Image 1: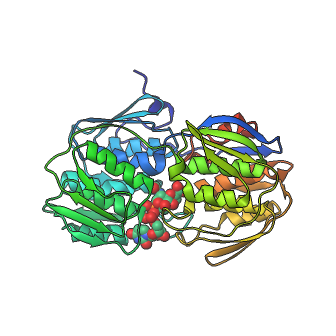
Image 2 (image 1 turned 135 degrees about the vertical axis):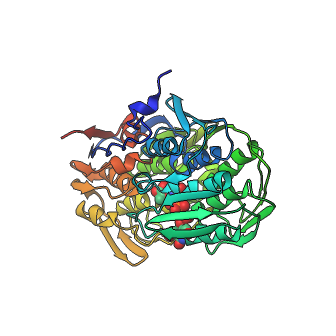
Image 3 (image 1 turned 90 degrees about the vertical axis):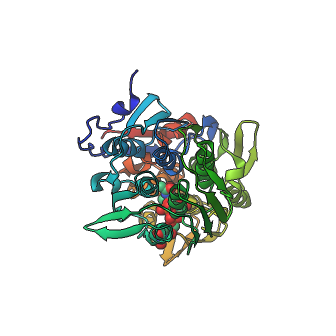
Length: 441
Ligand code: EPU
């Protein structure tokens, strides 16, 4: 059977280096209001990759469906192959992970540095192998992204952790359940602790746990593997360790960030769209805010419907852990507010350096001033197309959306960052009638 992952550029050989992701450019020109229906993909980057880590806990073949092939997937696949797993992709959005063979609990720098989700192998490797050597992920374009909460949580369960020559070296004579209070509801730390606790001896209680739908999805997959995780999706998660887990066949939740991005695209370009597969219950806060701005959104039998009549109104926004307004929507929201009527204050509470895209937006004629964690966005009638550069996945998405509200041509360089988290954002916008295309020149 054809293995689609090879076509995505994942290196097949166990030790072969990954090719560098080619630089790509997207061109946006003014067009008509959006119209039509698109399907929202699975949340591969922030949910599916973590469930690949869950598969490490159960020797055998697990099957993950709705794994939309985004750019981070081949990198995770390569990491799994290096660790000794056999990974196949029999269909474009199906990933089979066979972890029957011996697993080498080592995640090298050249793979980990490029993908945040890879740090989730730490909890799973400690659970499966009792030890792990995982490169510290590098800095990110959105903030410092420390791992102290991951470490303290795993240490409370009996892991010994050191950082040596840029590598996290962890080992344990056997993980034991513990009660642990997180300083902050970190998504990654909650996931690592749940993964480690699944096979630990005794009961683990995680207080102040992250409540994102991705956590509930991970827990539901683990429970179908035989784990006993209670309370995922709330602030207190209890995990009763079990002796062993079985491989699973699971379907990843729809990508709420892609859905929100497309809703905001409708807010900027105007028009009427339907998003098949989008789930209102994962998007309540963003739909509430967009509603205050004047975008009409309602659930349909298969997803969400949205309509924008005319220019939206400015509304203040502050990002918070789920169910608050997600930080991953913030850059696109600033793009939307840049062409809304009035002035808004946007506060970023999760990451300390997520306003890097603002200078690019201002080069397009936006009036946005940043001050520490805040930015003041004074809406202008229309932006003006310019060459701009994407610095990370959501920053790039925001600039593509800004192009929809600009006169003339907007050229967004380095959109390979966007492709890390979206299957084909330009293609989906084009399917809704926008004048958005990839270019080689
Ligand atoms: N933090 C610490 N210490 C830790 C862990 C986190 O100080 O041990 C801090 C971080 O530096 C950050 C904040 O806590 O300031 C939140 O970090 P969190 O751990 O919740 O985030 P993450 O697990 O690293 C995931 C998503 C992000 C998303 C955040 C918040 C993945 C691969 N990434 O990151 O997604 O923004 O949760 O919801 O799941 C994106 O999709 O664009 C993206 C960045």
